[in-house]
Image 1 (cartoon, rainbow, N blue to C red):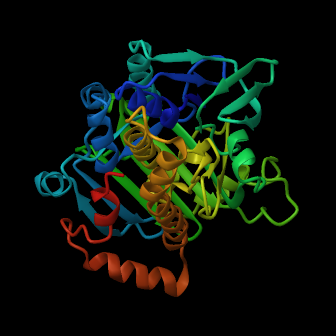
Image 2 (cartoon, rainbow, N blue to C red):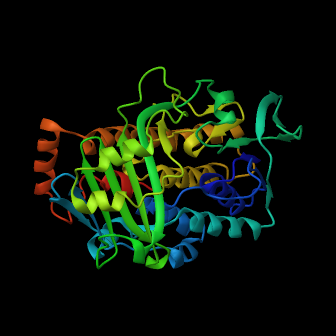
Length: 388
């Protein structure tokens, strides 16, 4: 079995398969295994998968357990709602809610892969072509390397060569939103809560998420806004839109705690945000997809990495029996995962519309949020209860 892509989903899938006795070969296009970005939120559905992979302890050792998530109105500074992550939350979902640095999570996955005799890791292998021949898939890399496998799992992200082979549906969809990220020493951060907290500031076409990572030594911030400069015909990858100047303009005039914090965001790199509508299938013959290759989603549910971990668990279960027919196993994998991941994709889009709402939408949203108790989990139950 070959996994194309060595990010969070790819390495987790390798571990899931190896834990069931399957030999796996991972091809990663980058010269080393790294995660670009800063923080990642891991809800109970993700932690249950990490527990299955026997990685919960190493991940929790570097993670922060926030006591609550708080949603704030970015313009007025009003507190809208909170979600309590205490004993009732953990008893309900069987796991806590944690935040960590993406590289810490990837490091835990990588160490476990390196310790397995059933997992082979290769870097600098950019897959550019796939072709099925009988009961094998032939893989061609940019450097001329060739491989064959009885099964290929595409974990190669947003612009996936494997997805192009499976679906051929072109580039992902740009939302017109752009993110600026940055983790800074907590001593340099502004308006840090006394207790570890996820703070989500929301406003018209803008939001800011803040939480500590690395045992509380770093403070992660992500500022997102809908760019007025993005329009049809603009190259989504160009820097004609979503500029640092637009960032400053969008975050000015908000509550001082928001504008002063946004001033500390790293401006060296911007992330245009992309997703796709749910796909009708993730599989073609002996090639299937996981993670962002299968179901790229906007970040508004904080579930991209969590859903990739669920994929990894499910594909390991479906391929556990060495005598299983590959096509039957992949059909079962899709039946377990595709509708749930598609729902997460859809709701991530809707959540973006809700948190960036203005006018009547914002008035109704705020009125509803004010009514919620901190232990009211009705809107997250479907997401956090699901294990696959």
